[in-house]
Image 1 (cartoon, one colour):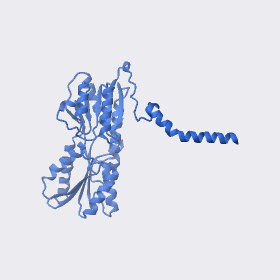
Image 2 (tube, rainbow, N blue to C red; image 1 turned 30 degrees about the vertical axis):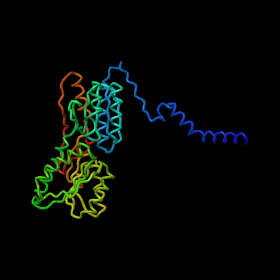
Image 3 (cartoon, rainbow, N blue to C red; image 1 turned 90 degrees about the vertical axis):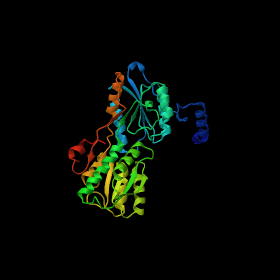
Image 4 (tube, one colour; image 1 turned 60 degrees about the vertical axis):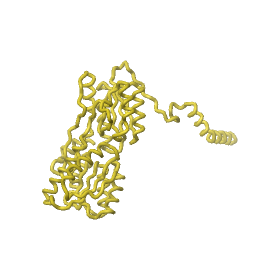
Length: 347
């Protein structure tokens, strides 16, 4: 019994001293970065003759983003001749800038950047340029005064996506004989400063501006998330009882918005009180299109990894590349969401 008491006493002392020990370890740099918060750089075996690519992904805010990440990871494999260094920035630009500087210090061959916002990249991209590392911008765009700071952009034409939404609404209203009636619209915008948000807003506004009877009651940022989309939609519903159309700039916000609308007692989609126009066309959203809950979904294709690989191979062979490469995309309604489309949609 005495021995047990001694052991308990010693353990208690250790527990009391543990925080101090951990602090000391952190100060001395022990623990392999565990306490300092420093991530160890991966070992790159240059003798394997692989193309080293550092990818800064902006985050994992949606199913679309997860699919986009998977497409890159599947394309840039060791079997395909690549050594991939992947970093998830968790929606923070400062994390992306830190990652890019880490890629530069590791002397990667290429940097792929999916920027969380458009602006604020001049300095770090200049550093990459000075290091002689080509930068491929993926998905969203960057706004820089010197276009030579990045090599090319692979992604969607977000302005065109916004225009597609406007064109569909024109045709929809014409079919229903409502072209000359007052139409009240609310817009759930994505993350403030993101090129997808900016482009889709601009594109739809270009078409809406041609119709004096289209009243955009309000536009609010929903951060491309289900939770924020529902919150914004709830605010809209409290302010306005005559909403005819919801423009939601991605499917996740759409899911939240539809939930809010249904909880308010109103109906959505084909034959409903409120017309729903969404973007991205992920699998779950396309199922809702097929059943008539979402009227139309403007595709934003996340399968961009193969395009990235093709660009890198062109550069490796010394060929010039175009400044922009747009992925193929479609517009989905009840008429063209077939079982085949749903079965092929893996994201």
